[in-house]
Length: 87
Image 1 (cartoon, rainbow, N blue to C red):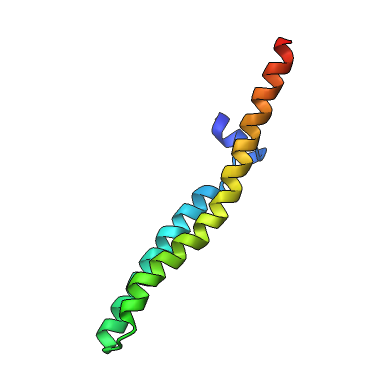
Image 2 (image 1 turned 45 degrees about the vertical axis):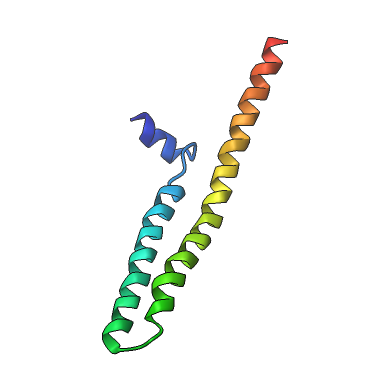
């Protein structure tokens, strides 16, 4: 129940989990695109199979980085408030 309450009050974010799901869908999509290119006899499948997953990874890493930075700043804020209470 507490997890649902945290999600509903925006204390816990859903977007990082959705980004991970979309990341794997993007990897699957780029590999499927490479497979289609192989079946069509197109030489560009090599690029789709190598650069496609790499590009998906870079794009989603940049999106996740914003959430990780926000989480880390929250940890720093909590530690600073604990230090202020002790003094």
